[in-house]
View 1: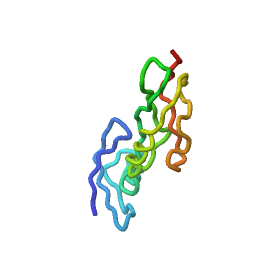
View 2: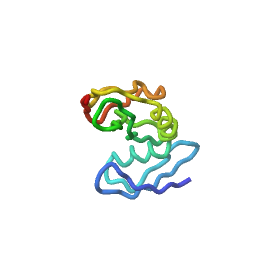
View 3: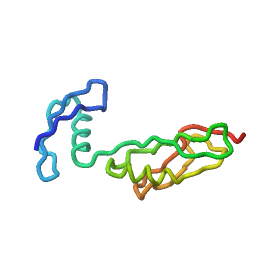
View 4: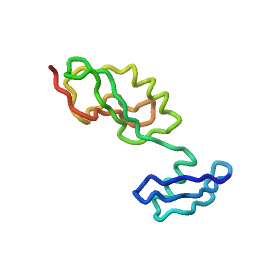
Length: 120
């Protein structure tokens, strides 16, 4: 199978052609740098994304707190992760970088606060 991708690792946006057989990347062409090849391999075998969302917060000026995963999680787990995050409620104060959920869904990736919020 041949897949066409646009690399998102740098501003060049190289058009990649990836040949995949039996869940293995056979070849990558069209990349201008090694990061393009790594992106193509990852995207074709097990794509991953950084999750950014919000959780409810009590006792703060706002009702929700922006959160983000420290690293990418597998794309096929994003919806399950969102279901888990919907049930999270925190109390102010919270500092940017505080771990809101450790080892999200057993991925080894923490969900952290993306901003600080003081108690009102």
